[in-house]
Image (cartoon, rainbow, N blue to C red; front, side, top):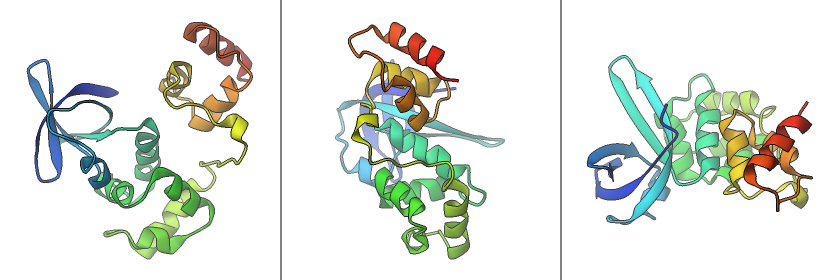
Length: 186
């Protein structure tokens, strides 16, 4: 499984871009919002979500790990495929999507091209219990924190990773912090 790709953006295609890595060009589909921020020749890291079908192998890239996590959440909902997930993320920011889910805002999702009222209701119903928002600033963890990323890569949900690292001294090494976090999680 490809988790991330770091390379140079070589060219834009209508709905994707080509990222050059060691002489190989990977076609990576990105959201419209992120595509507007990218410049040809720029070296970037994309967090990858793979879509593997019998006749197709597609890479979806995100500049932020949270966007990839939200993509996975959205596409876990029946009726929301990769294109619909990308359409939602192209139209709205991750925190806006989470907020709309928590507030049962059906019109927020049904305003996105390709998302009807029933699919919007299903997104809210399926994801409301999975997404936990907090106003507690102490729990806000830097998404670039290597210990946080390690826990996410081990399968922890962002909220669980934040809680696990909350009381661990940030001056310790990444390895020590991850070990302590794993011991503390029940």
